[in-house]
Amino acid sequence: MAQALEHAQSGNLRAARDLYGDILRSDPENPDALCNMGVVAMQMGDWEDGSLYLEKALKVRPGDGQVMSNLHVAYTHLSCQAQARDDKLDMIGWYRKLMSLGVHLEPTQVNLLGALSYADQPGLLSDFNTAVTPEALGKTILVACMPKSGSSWLVSAIHNLTGFPDARLSLAFIENEQELYPPAAAYWATASKVVHQHCRASSPNLKLIQAYGMHPIVLVRNLADTLVSMRDFWAQGAVRNSFHYGDWDNLDETTKHDTLIQHLGPWYIQFFVSWVLAAQKGEASPLWVRYEDMIPNKEDTLKSVADFCGLGASDADVAAAIAATDGDKVKTRFNKGVAGRGAETFSVEQHEMLRSLTRPFPSVDFSPIGL
Image (cartoon, rainbow, N blue to C red):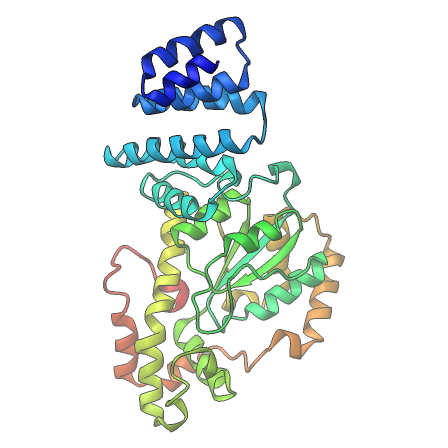
């Protein structure tokens, strides 16, 4: 061993490799020889062979910091080689090996998510959380919804039906995009919960949904009616959640309506299209709920949610949950709840402006949101 180390340090790598080979033939699980053999192989340019020796060393000596550090170097180099070849499946394999080491996770996760997206590969739980097994996961009911679509009522009803707590899986809830946040998802992994977020079916969100086995419920509403409800919500002070708060109160009514269509409308359209595409590609299998169907048919809606999520709720459970929800007007934040206000509020020109937002998506049926 001393001679092999001396050869390695003096740059005589072939002699060092031969001596380490002699040691391993007589003592195949010698952790020092396995680790040093791996390092020598890496120095000779054989990164994959080096990683195999280091993996064997780690099995013999789990958690060894030096072995893990060398493995991190090997996997990083191999992932870079795969990237240079534009071999996304190979990149995914090496990124997942890097994730398994449990160190420097965030930059690796960014690269892994990108590779998964471009290769159209699903997300695995181990891509985000190596401390929890799939069997230990809690049930996650994700209400992904258009703002002002009656989502507070639906979420409250699900809470009352299940008793599950509310989990916030976004970094924050002010002006930011409400993307699913991996550390929050990891924190809540083993708990059953209800998640209420205005999130599009972006690729990173879909990978998290797949990895944690979430049950996505997509809630939509007539877009013109939704924008009118948002106008009223902003008039009550919620404009602070946007970047329009500096000028909103001083705008005339026509400009306010134009602003809602021109600035909020594109997000709503992208929200809807993103979930349509995700469903078409098989990246998610959401339960679609329309506000216009939900409000007059609350029992049927909540039953469909219970069935979709495998809750096994009885008719009596559903009725009790709805009664409790309808009795709490503050928690549900119910506004007017009147369908058709958008048709009465916006001018002919503004309705055309709203419909024009759908023209870049000729293959998408926008009738569920009234367009």
